[in-house]
Length: 116
Length: 113
Image (cartoon, rainbow over the protein chains, first blue to last red):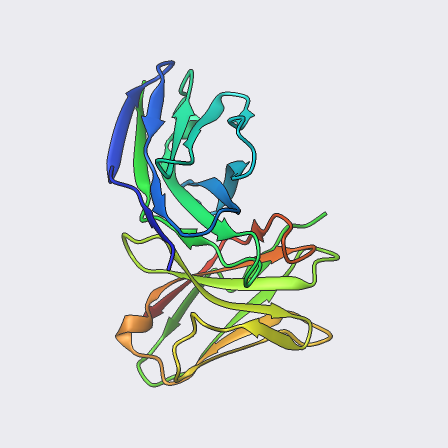
């Protein structure tokens, strides 16, 4: 069975600085998706970025980028120029490309604080 | 275009009562997923439904929990005879197709007293 591990329960970053959140996963599959979701205090789950395993190029979305290391099964999220609005829980998630088609497997999350 | 709508946002039930959680997917979406989030935990998959069909219920507890997505109306997650351990946030997500991006609702926080 696939697992997702986020080893940093909490992280803190100074406004305008850069922070990296770690995520590792375990799978025997070769084709899958990886995601980072943001959950602010409102509890809404917001998709931040996604990566398809067959793509070697790291995904980027504005200030958010990932470092995808398929062999190491590592998928870290880098937030550049951190803003106060980035403060939230961040969840890493895995989904098989086939199978049940939608079954996301989540890590336990990292709580990010942004200091003004 | 309204997003995924869940209601109620908060639900309090006494032990032994029934809880009904509703989820209206985004317009045009026919795939619905339910997840449960316990305190200090990530979301855990419960069930995947299409209209009138349960596709995958591998994450559903064997007893007291059921889900449906009728031809008309919202998807319903039903918990019978609730216990304190059922207290959690329950999230619904919907997608246009099975492999398309899933959009989440704001969740229902169930508290069992």
